[in-house]
Amino acid sequence: MIRSKIQLVVGFGVGLMVMGCSSSSLITAPPIAYSNTSPKEAELTDPESRHWGHLDLQKDTIPGMSVDRAYAELLKKKKGEEVIVAVIDSGIDLDHEDIKDVLWTNQDEKPGDGIDNDGNGYIDDIHGYNFLGDSYNEQMEMARILRLKIGDEAYQSAARTKLNEMLPEARAALPQLKQIEALVTLADENIKSALGKEYYSLADLQRYQPKNMQEERLIGMLSQVISTGQEIPEAIKDLQDGIKYYETLVNYHLNVDFDGRTPVGDDPYDYSDQDYGNGDPNIKDPDESHGSHVAGIIAATRKNKKGVDGVSSNVRIMSIRAVPNGDEYDKDIALAIRYAADNGAKVINASFGKEFSPNSEWVYDALDYAASKDVLFVHAAGNDGLDLDSPENANFPNDKPNGKLGEFEDNYITVGALTPLYGPEMIAVFSNYGKENVDIFAPGDEIYSTMPNDQYEFQGGTSMAAPAVAGLAAMIRSYFPNLSAAQVKQVIMESGISPDINVNVGGEEKSFSEISKSGKIANLYNALILASEVAKGRVSL
Image 1 (cartoon, one colour):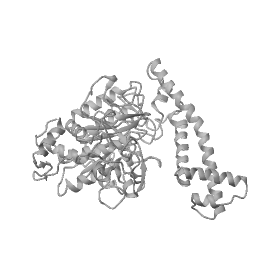
Image 2: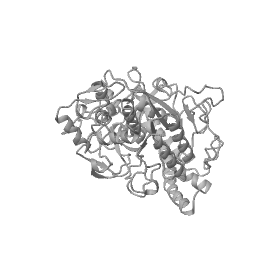
Image 3: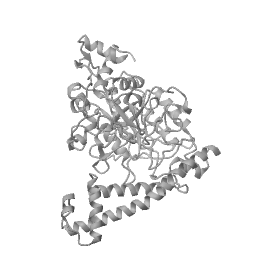
Image 4: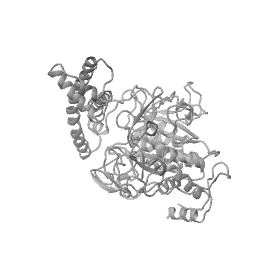
């Protein structure tokens, strides 16, 4: 309905207005029409791969959000209002060269004096708050349920069943990966020595005459790795990452005897116990990078000739450290949402989720509170490659408490992840989907963004897709501050791109329109145009 109204306006040649801080912000461009788009056949160039989420499906045949095009064609000489985006995540590297200039600062708080100067209940919260204290590694909720005997027998049995599915696999995979990594590393060192060079190609291996059977086996193994399209150093790093992943599962996430909460000093299952944490939401562990990566996607300083450009300008990032290396606690998330809403955030990015949520009512109450404060909540759909419409595929939090039909609040948007490959492989293999429980898709696979210590790296997940949409939402709220959170959500969903293609999800082929509520790809260019129409009263949502 809304798209037809836009087309009617465009058909009559009416100029579209963007109502930012200035009423003279005129846009004459119509929404982008995407039809007969062919897949990009060439591999992405290095600049494209580092920036693909900002590219344009029409111009680049890459399913980005048309961010560059929106800035170049719609936003020249236009200024928006500043918007606070809360990142509820792990800690953020607050000193990062591409993040430090876009941090939210609590002007009413004096740093380091140990006093709650602004009376908001949180001491020394200059750039946000840290609900995790000095803790980092944590259990998954299923292990905590069994350790603390939370819930009734049926609930504990479900947790035990899931843990018993995952733990044997992790224990079996770990020694296998260690053995493979040791062999590949040994082979690499020996062949580098034999060839007398640090870097070698498949052709080098094929020309080399092995001196014995052992060398022949080593060359065969290395040749097999390179033949898959992976360089040896990359393969070794992937193996080492896999080892770390399974070690973390075995030692922390699925270890029923581990207690990661001790350094915090509270009872995480007592909602009344709220005197904990501190005002330092910086990273606490060398491996703590998730929040920094997410923050960079939203708002890394644009056009500073460093690293990456965030989706949004005019944004201040509020860092709320509430997601450990493991499952988050419901109490931390509920308090983090309330903190964001009370301290001026207009968008919350939530790149987290879990299968068990014993105190989900605390989170739902907080989401209700955020809705009352007109805050948009942007949530990652999850990385299990599952159809969230199936009752057995739980992912908390969500916008359907207790499996009820219909959304309980209209300020909640759930985001799935895209790859840069327009066509059947456009949905990231890890991304959850669902006609009722995922709202929209956005770039989320192999996204280049900020990492601690002024570094940058590619990472993939719906955790990367959600901040792309959070950044888009912040842009709408910046240039059209009169629009409500519910209207911003509807603008994002209605203005997206609707590819008429089939995609592979869950081992089968489905129409793109079948895997999310909107059936669309988030698009900044079209969202700004539709937002201008809504702001001027030409289109109602």
